[in-house]
Length: 178
Image (cartoon, rainbow, N blue to C red; front, side):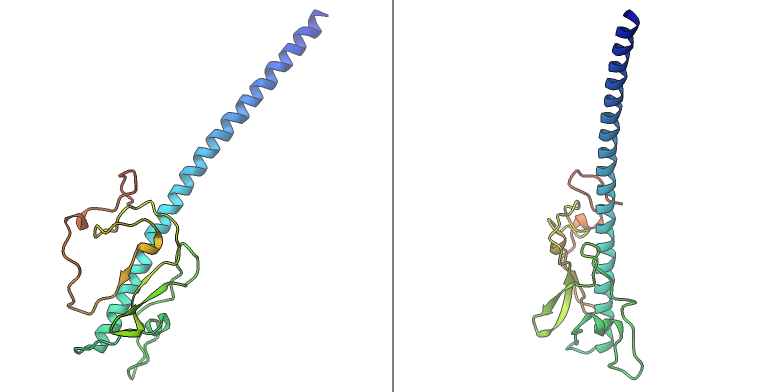
């Protein structure tokens, strides 16, 4: 009889130990999932910056070919992929980059005020909040669609120099994103 009672008590402690182990494992996996999610978000933000800057450079290249006092902006992203305005087609952009937040090449084209049917900048369609608080040039950011990538004509002055422009971008906790 004593042996049976001891065996039942032992089974109860084993069961409690197993439940404790499962709870610890679940907590560790939740922490790992959160860290992975943050790392993936940071990678999407870096990709957004790279792809947006590539499109802005392509717009600059497109404008450079036009030259003159009245530069001609592109109408579509396809104009940047294959520019047929000259004798030989030019490729200002290697490919139609997908927005890292939407997964599609569905950038919002920002119309040029002097040429409303053409665009001078792009931004993401995503309303997702960013970890990064400001762009490398110091402009504040809240969501992905706030980040505007502008193609300027050669020699056009960018916005006034900002001392924060040389600092690497940081997230909301002040940690560098690079």
